[in-house]
Length: 123
Image (cartoon, rainbow, N blue to C red):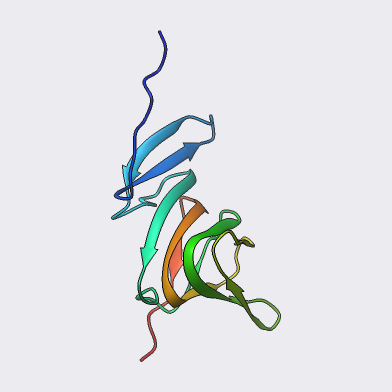
């Protein structure tokens, strides 16, 4: 028996398990404790409503489809990288980072799980 294809759109995310099987998840809560990688289409008109995030389980891939962003990485010093359409960045495991929107952007993220940490937004 052949498996059925999984059709998805911008309201879905896809989970890639350790067995390399793909399942559909909700983009409203893409991580949800999933032990594997989550592939998520993201639309951003403004900065994320948190003070940064960190993935302790593995590297994260950010890929810009449209728009412009900067990504601030807290390495030995703070580094900022600007990305536009067709450009991406691998954020190393355990590095705090934040995406800043320069112009409304469409991104694809490939994020490790199951753990994800967020910082509160500083006002």
